[in-house]
Length: 79
Image (cartoon, rainbow, N blue to C red):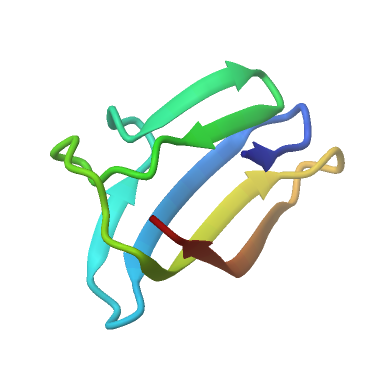
């Protein structure tokens, strides 16, 4: 689950450790829980479950001052 600022996300992409694109916001891979939370269903954009491993996310959101902020992080998936 990604906790967000109330102003909203402009970009959320997930890549595997090799740098290959896996999923992006707006696909069935994500579920919007509330205006401030998004859940990754641990699937790719084709709705297939991703393998165990480390994934990289890029999250861009507009902060309360109207400035776009970027956060890059890692997610571990264990099946």
